[in-house]
Image (cartoon, rainbow, N blue to C red):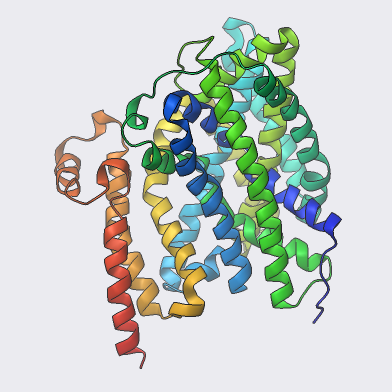
Length: 443
């Protein structure tokens, strides 16, 4: 068992790889949109957004590293193996073919490339681009052992350089001073920013990407559990720091854009308008490079993670078939449009995120609370119902009639339900009950 440690340069490459895997489509457009919505309340909004968009992913990576788990399935199996199958499959579908992967192609096309397409050809251009985008991601994903080289050494540095040009212009030549807060950011900027951070999907992705980081570290000859855990956390801190800095700058860009442009329905048009305002036609090209690089490197990681995990869950399925599914399905879904994808994915995230949060928290607290199945099961069960209600509450208004409306009327009595945090009090009660059951039943 080797107690060697990665060199600073190796840690940088691993941290850059992790940042690159995290920082995809939503990471570009959501902080920009938060900046525009929060306006004068941006400081508190960013505290909440950074807590869920940066803090939770860091804790997720740390949970994988500290517990020595071989991935999210082993972590979720502390609740029970049937639950581990359901949770793992749901998580990977959400961050893979169902939502996150199609969003990568949709955002990179609508934000970066649509300005170069004739108005009557946008549908066919999106279809052609989706084939090219996912074909390229599939080609890289065929060799999962090379992901640190592809993403950490090449794609992430190129992305940071191009994005840095745009962010430098936004910092040194702001377009305006922003405006008033709107929607939930008027009265509750902290909690609204926290739940809006769910949209990045990074706490879910952390449970998927954590094992990629662990494997990369072990591939360097570091095998002692403490050394692996320490290197994993240091790489996570590096990636989280980069994400936090970029998020703040993107949010400022969105806030200041109100000095020149009107409000938009998502962060994509804001980025496009700002890039063109600073650099003219070259800005269109620069933004296209930024979003394609951002989305491509994350797509490679998600397809690879999907293939690796489902191969472990279902050993009879060949890896090439699995990454083929993770490529073709989002290729089809990407053509339904960005706004539709965002409308459908938000309820799923609101339901799945609380389950991921409590799993991460229990894993990190296991040195003090233990790993009793009674504890993990009780907290998860107490969280699941309210989390599902939070998901139903995020459905479009037209879908909230009948029995759904009756359930939501009951859920409104839970503290925090108005801001998507109705699961917190039940989870806390589940923790107390679970500790009591663990002490009594495991004695």
